[in-house]
Image 1 (cartoon, rainbow, N blue to C red):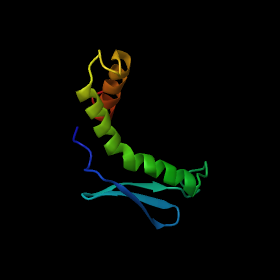
Image 2 (tube, rainbow, N blue to C red):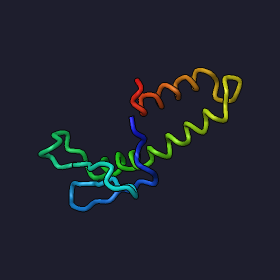
Image 3 (cartoon, one colour):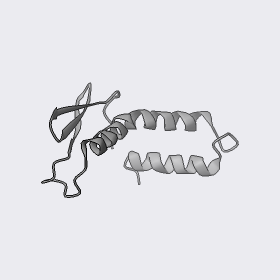
Image 4 (spheres, one colour):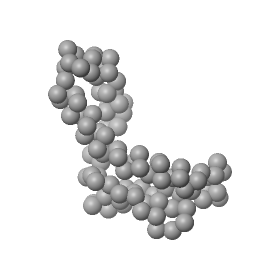
Length: 96
């Protein structure tokens, strides 16, 4: 699986009900909040909360990788947390 687009990512709303997630390399994804597309009627506040999480994703991956690089099972994180981080990173990278 290829690596994600480079951070930082930013969110912008080009039109009502739409939020684009962009990187310096181009478009990452587009979120829609229009009722016709999503019957659960998410609000723009929900959409922006989702967008903030998506925008932070590359930095979260980098931090998780850095945490693993700086720790071992005798470190602060502990083996269980390390195993969970490794499993999460594997899912993110499409290995699971």
